[in-house]
Length: 482
Image (cartoon, rainbow, N blue to C red; front, side, top):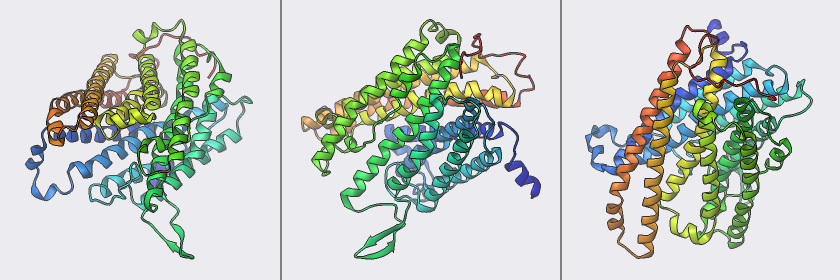
């Protein structure tokens, strides 16, 4: 038992990052297969009749979708974030990680959190709130995980040797701090409340009436802003100098682009929420163009003279394509905050395409670049196969394009038919060919992720030292600044 705990709470430098990255890749496979299963059900619903009768209550679209979403959000992407943060914060501050043992404890408990979701969500233990589906004890565990991560980040910053704090570190520190109250408020983790002058306990995770809808979508939007976007941009500002061999064009501009959009009600335009709140959220959504433009200009100027690396270095390709998708996501986000456009596309497949553009095309593409650059450093082996890495990129990229454009077209058709009062079932039948295209694109992405996982597995089990060969080369000098 002592040996088990010693292994879990290892103090080997970089061990928490290695474990976070490997477990993230492991948990990536589950949501992509669940997504493929749901795409099959949308195209051919009778497929579910092939399941054993006793299994149908647990393996159906309604039970699988929240599991698919939560595994992708908290199993795959958030675990890559945590691993990268624990590795890069000490590197950028010129010191060692505050506590490697604490980092490894966080990995262990994070896997307990993910397994808890896998058990409870198919059983129907679900709060019914978007991105906040898990039950109260699991929410408490996740808050604890972010607190542990914050302790490690701030502890490392406190003992830093480097006087100047690079913009990436500011992003990490903000994300692990602000996301805690965002998650607690959005998920109603604090169970005490006053009712008729009395202090009562409420573990439902939901507020009352329209207030619940407003707070839920404040959380939904700022799960992306305070966590996904804030960390992702911090990681992108590390990847840029690292992969181009050039210092960041403007650190000051990066700080100007540090601010984000603290709103979420534009997801609920035309709802019973207060009109002043809907108007205010449109205003703040338009202001998002400022930090977006600052980042994109900084990215473009830093990449000047290095665009040829998109061909030779697959990590740069992931980063550049992900940035293009990020810009498109932001343009769509602003457009969808206008009431007239929202009326045409909301509650249609357009929004599903938009969310996949953001989650897969932006953040996940950037994190593929991060895995390809960090994993060889922490496992001391080069990426096993450049050819497999190329297959991973092209299958994922082309599959995502097919997937998104099918959903964008389907969403526009839905919106147009509803304006024209076309019968609902007629619209559903008209979408079947688009669901088939979605299935094809999704299948290509699944194959791409299987190739990725196999490549990572062979990398970890390889006996070739990292100095011997580098199948994912950059042929670049050391970066001017980390």
